[in-house]
Image (cartoon, rainbow, N blue to C red; front, side, top):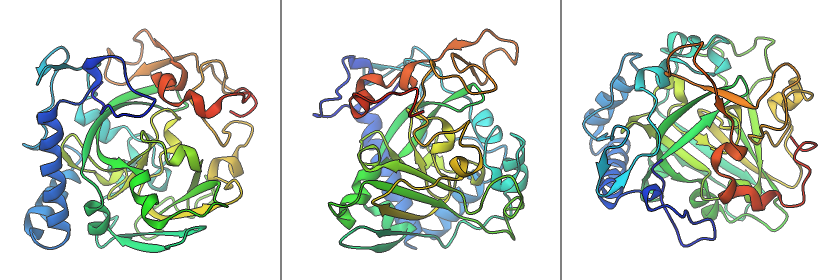
Length: 333
């Protein structure tokens, strides 16, 4: 996988896991262009790229020089094959647009992603509402490739474009009393046809512990495959938490609230016996209706292909396990 190394104590041991400099600087240029477009300096280009991203058959643009398995980019080697853009943009969970995997791509066309803002409030010194262009300007952009899994036992490998959520949270200065972070998704019943249905309580709410939210692997994402996020993938800004099941990565964010108590998330309200607050990828904890010891990688030889062994913390155990030291991860699932 391609992932940036840092000086923190979660350093990777393999040189092949370090994002190559050429790719990193190329993605910095991408973010600057996106920020300029959102700010109105290149609005026509931004609108064209956004329109292309919202087409179900869209292909990555010229900015996404992504390598195939085994090919070298500035001395680095990809460790896993990327899921095709077609699969990643047409096989989704986004219940505001429907419960079938194809529903989000079919039903999200009328959803409006501009103008857009995200409020950050609660236990912070500097509560703010960030316009999309402000979010894009906050930090140099980095590309990271994450393996994402959800509770149904399927997974994808997607090159997300964004930066660590911590970059945003530092700017609002969390208070010492803040222990959790709540994330609220847009809930527009006029353009999101399943909002108001009995599937879940709306708006969709998720949450993390503050240390989880501040971890460098927790990402605010604005794009994938070198392009702006499609609506069905959580445009214009979403969360990516790669060591947890997919439903923890909230899409189309409109509000981030820091709290002292654990947020009551949508799935904890709806089915607490099935979906706990932490929802870390743990192959030793079965879902009440199926095993989570194995997974199916989308795009690999169809539905009846041999499944892969599920990895603890989705393969990021070395980076995140210390946050759960001493916890019973079968009890706190």
